[in-house]
Every structure is written in structure tokens, then in C-alpha cells.
Length: 107
Image (cartoon, rainbow, N blue to C red; front, top):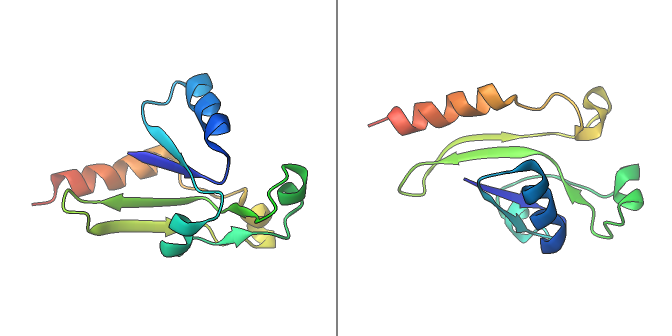
């Protein structure tokens, strides 16, 4: 498992340590990886200006790949007013674990 964030590496490292996450968080400030995966980037959201993201920030997304690298599940947040421009209605940890288990159990 790997996380990806628009934040710089030192910020991601502190976030990982503070929350005791057992996986790495990659920095993608230029959005190369998230763009390749079709993840939307918010540039007009007020948080992009508050947190000083000149190129915007990535919307939440979850991807599950099998051992061969094939994508088996993808969920991408679509920013709109109804979900607070991407801040609400995310997948729960239980939903993500369910998808991971399904891929792990598949032949």
C-alpha cells in the first residue's frame, strides 16, 4: 500500500509519523502520477490558496492493483458543491478494506 499526496516529502513524512501509518506516502506536487491515473486536481478551491498549492491539490482517490500490477478497483472523488468540492463522501476505511480483500482473494 502506498499513499500519494500533493504535499512535499517532509510534510508527508511528518503526517505518516504523527498518524503511525505503516505505508509510505509519495510526494506528487506536479501531479504526474495522479494525472496518469485520471485523478482530478483542484486549483480553484480555497484550500489550494490557503495551503499554498500553486498547482492545486489532488482529489481523494483509491486504487487497488493486483500482484501483476493490473488495476482491479478505482474510485476517484469528483469535486462538486454537493460533496464540499471533494472533502466529503469519501470511501470509508471499511469499504477500502473490502475492496482489498476481494482482490487478495481473487484467483
